Length: 229
Image 1 (cartoon, rainbow, N blue to C red):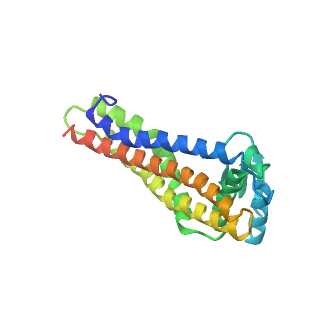
Image 2: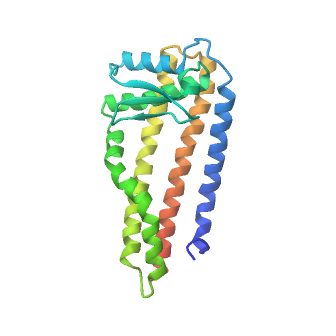
Image 3: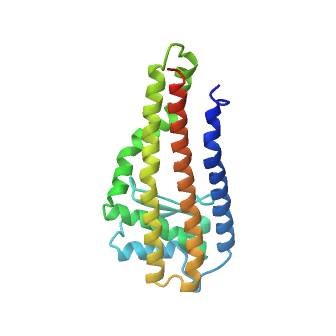
């Protein structure tokens, strides 16, 4: 009943958006990972220079396996770049490296939305793991109205949705910083900047899709809870 309830149709639009966003990311990355910047600066070199200039030289840059596995770890102050970004001077590599450096700079400059996201993360992590099983069990065994387990599941998942919502300004700001820094430091020419915008724009769309999906799932849980009244 959980999977074939009419509310299942609510998640179809964000699911389509998510699939489209993933296709956009892969397409943009594939295209612009083959177009090299005239500066010949690699992703690692750009990240290092940007961190040093901003006074965040204590952030460590590490190379790690995988494709599009790049991220900044604020707990360890480590910027992890995939091999295709770390060692490449492509437009895609520079855009992604600058974006992740943007997160490191957010941390260094005490950017409030990032701090808020870090505070919400523990609840969101638990919520994303336990919310559906608890709601599921409560939904199956509730006969005479909504169960406590359903309410707990909804509350936990609301934390995960809040984390997703707060993530949006953090990601948008990191991309904005990245584009400004790439142009100011002349890692990319004005013509090459168009490619970086496409790569980062496609990546931003994945976060929008993820938030839309989470919001629809939460709405679906509320509606299913009401069906037990």
